[in-house]
Image: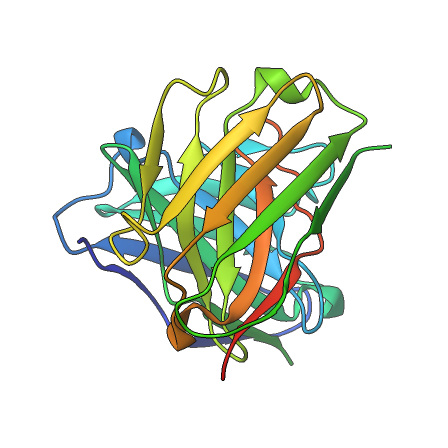
Length: 109
Length: 115
């Protein structure tokens, strides 16, 4: 089974910009992996932010964007807010199965 | 209002079985692929299984293959996960989630496998 890798932790200042990445042990991440990004706060269910690399849901704040960057999927947060302090997970598809990354703890400080 | 409500969790002995349900409302359930995802206490998200929009195709994580079965009843807007031969490592909160442009998640149901 493939392994999906994320930064364990990142810190961003309020108003700052940060990019979280999602890599695959099988090689470059492409649109064919249909990357998803999820946000989870303590004690809450996850929330889907991005699907299929860069598509947003109606509830996704405009400051979040998804892309492919340097062979990885990327989630960029521009203009971080205190409420963005959370765990972020990516999910990649592999011929029918899906694999989550280990998550990135983003601290807004 | 969109709602996904999981039920059926609880305490079960190792080797036992449990059937989880996910009741959907507020959106066109039959149009979406659906997933089950679990999260052990204090750990990250783990994908468990998915089913396509008409129920004709299912896939599973290696860790549950042969033990878990995903299914859906579009007439009742309900997703199921039949779990058998349960192990201690299956202990987790189980979430149902709508794939693709749906994006919705339930609040989860806790499954505890212990003697």
